Length: 527
Image 1: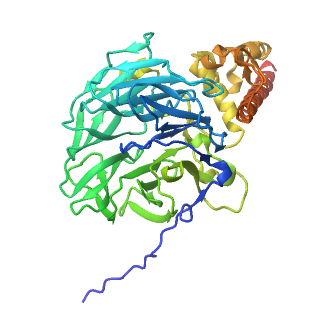
Image 2: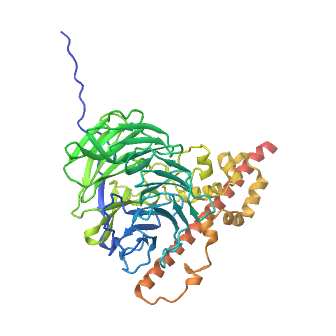
């Protein structure tokens, strides 16, 4: 008789994110009095970056959205200027991941418009877009920026088409997309890219999940599962898996996990509850955490994703009595690392006309920077130009560290790279001992001129400012709200100048250190 030995396995799994909890902002840190749209479209209606918060608003005649400084919390002026150039209701807004002053919007008027937001926010109604994209024949429901290529925008509409646009052209009105993808037989419900933007997945009203090449639009995989009706889709980073949220055959809310290389059968199906609201999925590739927020729910469930069975590990859920209509998400570079914040939602609460920030925090006793929960993450520097991407090149995102102080040095070198400074790029990749001393001394002597040349086009095109205010718009504040706005602009200008000063200090130290290294390497060789 053979005796099989039983191996003991613990019922729990070790995870540093096991005790993540949600912390809602105080009333003073919320945005109160925002006329959030009453549209029934299943979108997030909100977009956030480290400088601005954009939210689609209810308005009479045409469509509009509001752009607020992220620091402009409290009561919002009901007459606050808006971006109001669309002739129909705005259905989606998305910030350019590589330009905090550029936002795209799409509307029921069948157009996509790209807007340039002034450095100090919208001070008067903005009606003239930077670019207008005309190609769809019906209302445009979803837009997505390419995750690594600059100025590449995807849009999908009720004409069942996905269009790829390149904004690198002089025309203000663009009527011809780079490519049109026509695989869908019904309305596209969601879109998601993989990490390097070479592939993207869609869900459609015809119940099919499709995986396609982003550049050519070639269909790679197609899933049509009778037991799962997909509504939203996410490509889970580089894990070669897709996650969809939807409903089961019995109308229970459900999540399904798919193998990117074989989508004939889902790897996993899990029923959640019997509610009817759409589940919005959000994925953090740095922590491998998945967040599920239901439309009309007050709670947010979160899970940890692994590459081995059972793939999805439930952690816990955040509960609130305030239902959400949509959610905005702050990019990782805008998080507060000193409080161990790993994710931040901006929750649209329609019944109270409030936008409530919600921070997901890893509890740690130490107040120092926690490197294990903040790996290198995607930054705001594009890896490719639009022309390079269209020519057939794929690249992963340019990574940055979230450690306080490190962004300054990295952003400085990346700015030089972005402006085509080949010498700086080669210099950063080589050892300091290989540098020419005369070249470094020349760099040190002309650092001011060099750094000025590496400033972005936005900084170069800015009008002269005085105390953070455009000279052309200088006038004494007439109301308390105007005074508050001017105060916030002044604080933003002070912060920008301090950042610039820190960049120059770091640059000086870098060059001095390189001079010292070159001298040390040249002394033995001369002997």
